[in-house]
Image 1 (cartoon, rainbow, N blue to C red):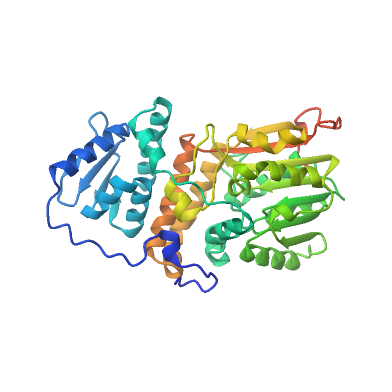
Image 2: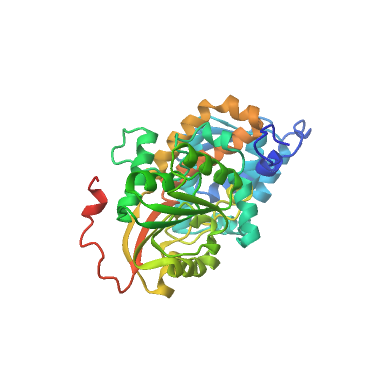
Length: 427
């Protein structure tokens, strides 16, 4: 079990490693077949700028570019898992310490992500192999969503407090100036959302998936609104309620430990930041129905989500080990939320590079807390999360992932903004 007393999650379920031992198969040299298959695999992935070295010292280097890093595969069983499971196999063996990256891990994942994007655009064997290796995300039923959220968010508030900002914002920040701190950028993100919703004192706001409650408290404190925020993470709701009490906002903010599908009442604004990734496309129409049911005739809605330019499942390893049930939608898929109810889209913004910068801050803070994280969990957990954060940076930098903010209102509402001036005008 995890060493972290605040969490009830078995670390082996997070990393998928259990008590595996390093295989004793390193005494025999790699075979010609193994070397040939590895060479073909690297070639099919566009020969990324990496050198691969096997346990017996045999290595394969790119022929058309210098290698940025060296990937050491230390056992035959690790190579076999890489052949069979690809991304999942690499992630598990890296976390276990049986695949070692000499050089900057971020350079490695960027190189692999760039090659992957090239393959996606051109098509080819590797793309077909990737599709075969994909797992379907876990189902986001009422019970399924609880299990998925528990797996990631209930690792313990003390873990996330180590490397998030002081308001515990675990979503993309907004950097109007690239030199500002993470705290300043997260504050700017909260204001950016509030201005897009045109909040004013006395408004009633519904929030679906409130995280640790920072946005709800910010809306209440700085915009004078009443908020009812829904979340199914026990750890997060407990933290949010405690903070609201400490900040004297309990009369303005209600945190409800329940699924967004049970949201009721009428509201002037609806907001969801970082939840849609966990909803599942099959439930988008139902989410739209919830918004339609609760939004006033002149209300505004905003959804902030990780997305993609083209439909694709989340990385198989991340979906299996880090974010079960996650799926980043395309804008076309998001239309299933608004079209059935005649909502009109007012604004769409893509903050892709803002998320890359946010993740860079998180990774830097995470690395500085490596010892504390290892004491909470173990070294395999540290490596798994470093790979997850680095891989996410690479995905945003290479345009594999996007970050969409979509604002919409009722189709017959003629009180919509005449321009975007309100979004960039400070209160």
